[in-house]
Length: 105
Image (tube, rainbow, N blue to C red; front, side):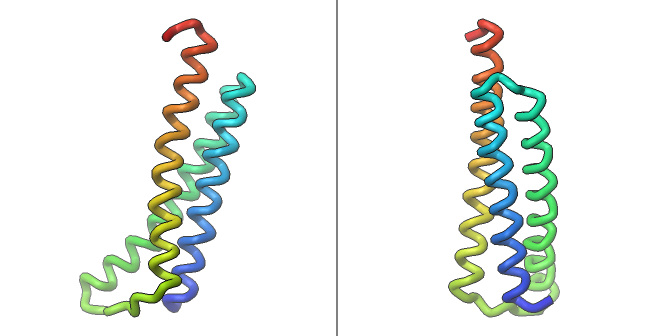
């Protein structure tokens, strides 16, 4: 797999994780915590697949295979970082919606 394909996999996987996370927040806001948790599980799966691509890139560099640093790869890494942040925040939002519904503050 070339660097372009890897960058596109990072962008697509991060986008999936971000979308599932945002969908999870929407379900929690609506009070459907089972759907919210299901979305977060899908976000986690997308993030694991995406992180595997990033790990392959890092492992290759550690073994001496240099990758060209392109604007596309920087963009892909930015998407991955944002998706990780959004996923973490979504977990917190879902927890807050759930405890609010239960009357626990």
